[in-house]
Length: 263
Image 1 (cartoon, rainbow, N blue to C red):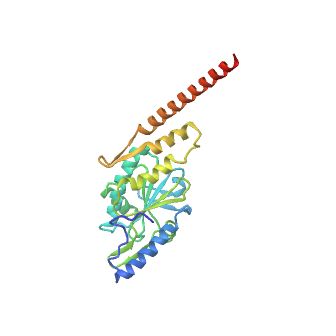
Image 2: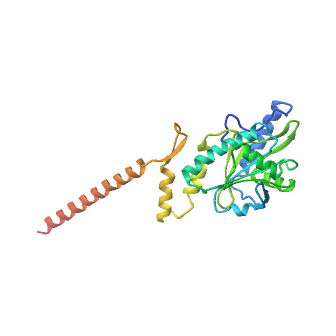
Image 3: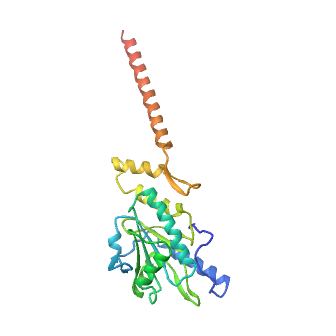
C-alpha cells in the first residue's frame, strides 16, 4: 500500500463529484505505483539558473524528481517547502552532495526559467544539488508518463498528484512518496537505503562501513534530526568478544582433556 499522508495530493476540488474524484485518485495511484521499478529515459531541460541540464548528468546518485506549477497557490509551494526541510535533514544524515533533486514545471506556457527561479527562491529551495527547470510540452508529457505523475487542467489551474519520485543512481524508480507535507524520514529512509544499502560491495571495508551506517543512523523525533547510534555496533562488538572468549575457553579445555588422556 503506498504511503498516503493526511494532505495527500490529488486536488479534487474542480471535479464534479466525490465519486469521480475517488475514481481518478485510484487510477492515478495505480499509474504512479505501476511506474516503480521502471527506468526513466534521459530527458534534457532548460535550467532555471543557466544552460541545459540532462538527467544523464545526474546519474550516479539517487535523484528526487518533483513536478509542480508556479501558479499553484497552496499544494506545490507546500511540497517544495516540506521537501526543502527533508533534504536538509537528509544531507545532514547522509552527507553533502549524496543525492540530487530536480523540480520541473509542468505548466509549459507559464513555467519559464525565470518563473521557476523565482519560485525556488520564494520557497527556500534550490542549491548546489537541487535544480529547477523548464521544458516543452512534449518533454513534460513524456516525463510525467515515465514517473507516473498525473495532472489535468482545471478551472483553478491543475488537478495533480502531490508526489516525489525517488530514483536510484541508475535512473530506476525506487519509491514514490505522496503528500503535500511529510516528515523527514519519509524522504530520508529510502535515500538511506540507496546511499548506504548497495552502493559498494558488502565485503569491502567501505561496504561494511556503509552497512553499519545504514543500521545505526537513527531518527530522533524530538529533535527532528538523525544521529549515529553506537548501541548496535557496541553490542555486536561485545557479543563477538564474548563469543571469541567462549570459543577460546572451549579450545583450551579440549586441549587439556587431550593432554590428560595422552599421559
